[in-house]
Image (cartoon, rainbow, N blue to C red; front, side, top):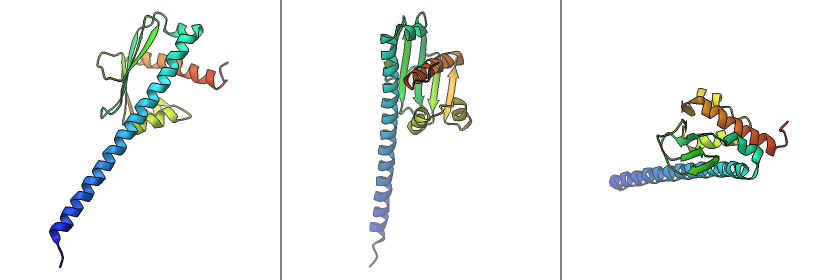
Length: 155
């Protein structure tokens, strides 16, 4: 009449499918966040190549930035050296500053926010910054300068 083994097997399969769906969704979120970050960084790199005034920000500057998610789903390394900017999809411990986001979703929320407030992310436990904060301030200045120029709000 009532097959308990079939019910248990069905529940296990449902849980397995739910877990698989969760993993797939998380993977898509991580990949989307990583790709979006790389696109923004590539745009910054193009601006350095085309605009001599903007390029002055990285003349004689050496810095290595690691953007990552705590679970390792996102890992983007940015290197400034000899007036050039290089972007790699990899993790490295040899950096000046590491910005760790809770996950890909937290990174996307930060990147798409109208008011990118790193302090808010720190207070909400969505972002952890380790290393030399002066490098983070320099990067923030360059990113904000680019954003203001693109929106026509640069004084």
